[in-house]
Length: 550
Image 1: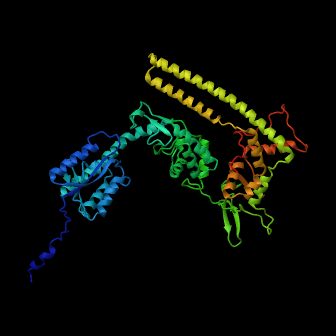
Image 2: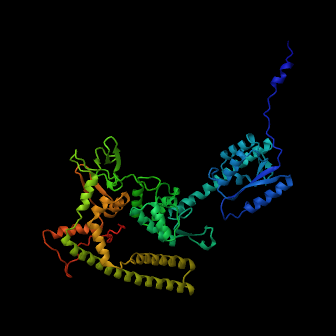
Image 3: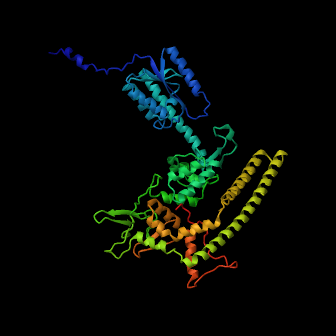
């Protein structure tokens, strides 16, 4: 009974069956970090050496992946790398191995890469072979060497970042841009790929597309949605998807602000020409506040057309709308402030007027007595003519300024030609002068538009303003919104407790009508003479009659 030899078979360790592929097929993965990379790991060398290795070892390269620039700092974001791993997993006929010229080309993520390689070998029976050293995961020793090389690639990446990061931070904090320049700008500098755009110092210049995109921001402030803006840009020769337009609104770069992660949470003014002012950028952000994705949200219905136009008197937020289905009544309310709520329409059962009815009354208050129409039109004409004279003077001054600036550029070129100044100094100051010239030319462009038939234009503008409440009452939701944006471009506050609107900025022609009515008083007729003072000039930002296509 002391003989235990019969039990020896149970003491031998059970070997896990090895996954052995008899296939001679291998797949090849190649990669460089940047488009302009010129080193010993170029795509051409990786392909040539891998093909030579395969021929010598009797392998057949049946599929190729990569062969382009992809950063190895993250495995998830590399499309070609993910395509390789996914196909290995799904393929019923798996390759014997994946060839990589050197391990740093496969990945620089360290532990994450080791996990991927372990799955390839242990679960799928697919080996990894480094062509340069002929090291592979076929043996345990080779597997450990491969893992060590992946860790070393991760360490090299970390050391390189630690060395370059302080310089990158200093570069960004000095007002320069790091990374891809957004649409609308040309990027010149020492490290750009295009040889025609290389220079000693970084220069980011607003190009012709950028000058057209500038209008898109104005249209957004005016209330246009992204689809309308896309169509208008297309007419001007700028082809952008609504997704690209939507992402543009959230980039402070366009107002000259640097928000790179390297500035450590502190925005910095950049050294490039802003496409728009900071004020315009912030106005667009307020418009987008209702939707974090940047798309236009139309919460209103025909029953609640004022959603997006009326604001809370307490917190300043836009009022939202809702419906009490049992009563079949619509309301406006503030989602933050308690008690700020008002029905959309008046009711016979309640003395409280509805917000829509109050809005119609407000529009009706801009109706001018018929006897004042003719003198009012005369007053508007005087304003237009006065503004035209001022515009003409401004254009003349700007044209003269451009001539002077161009002369200064010619003087710089002459001094440079005779060797009186160095090239770096010449390029620096010529660039500044050219930027000044472009700014002045932009101002000239803004004063180009002229009205061909002034009399008809004024008559139509007054006619629309006189019947604005009727247009609003009979129009569909889109027309109502356009009228609201036209008359009150920055919205209007609704005091729900007092049932009245508190106006702030009003379209110039409506503001003029109110002033006209106040100064008219009980005078039976107000006629203007050539010697009248320049009254009613209340339009600080220019004069914008209601011409929205009604």
